[in-house]
Image (cartoon, rainbow, N blue to C red; front, side, top):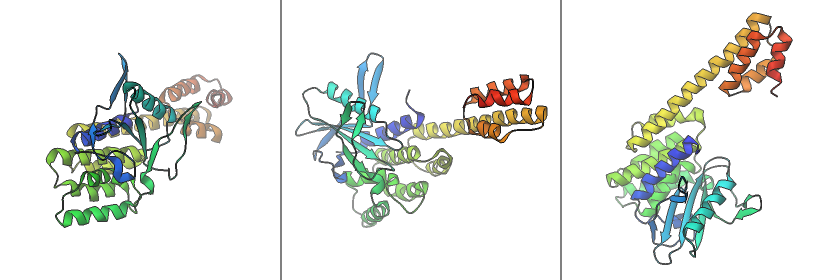
Length: 300
């Protein structure tokens, strides 16, 4: 099952690629055709299963297929190879290329390998790009009354993933107004993609700051509601975890007047609610402090 933040990222990119005219990634140095058309990113595998790539383009002049993937965290090489293989099977006899956009922690090419399978992909290192410089350039374009090109629009949408001297949510707040002169659907597509990519790249504790910014912007309503609901669900889950940990430690302290440091560390380190509930039952029923500690430390 896809991770929720991946689903939100896919949704935001869909807004973008559905609206940007000729979204060729040539601006990032990718040897992609100058003229491309957007294809459906959904690649059926079986009747009940499909692969969804972040973006899928076809070269207008040569018919080549370009699969785009945005990676914000630890790379999942198996998933990338699976996606490339699925696209190649869906378009037999056609040149298929995969482009991987690294949102952070990647600054040089490396082989995408999973077991014996490997993938030679075009790699774009967004986190190594001068985001502050691109933001200044795009501001000049808008200030001078010039229209943003398709290349400018792609750069604007990915701006939060580049290197900046300020927080990601501040970058979104500063960059989003530059899309205000675009047609309404395209403006929403750019800001939605910008917000979804930024959300995926941020740590969970940083995401509420971004949601506050996005609440004042023309993002796709469905996307924003999804992001906000996810943030609220995460907050509720964290609160439930805190209560479960406190319940285990409180029972230990009340019943046995002591909580060994190793036990406290183990309880504080777990993020599984089912384990904490099992421990709570174990310490309630334990005949003595040693048995209670053993029930918790046995998991290590």
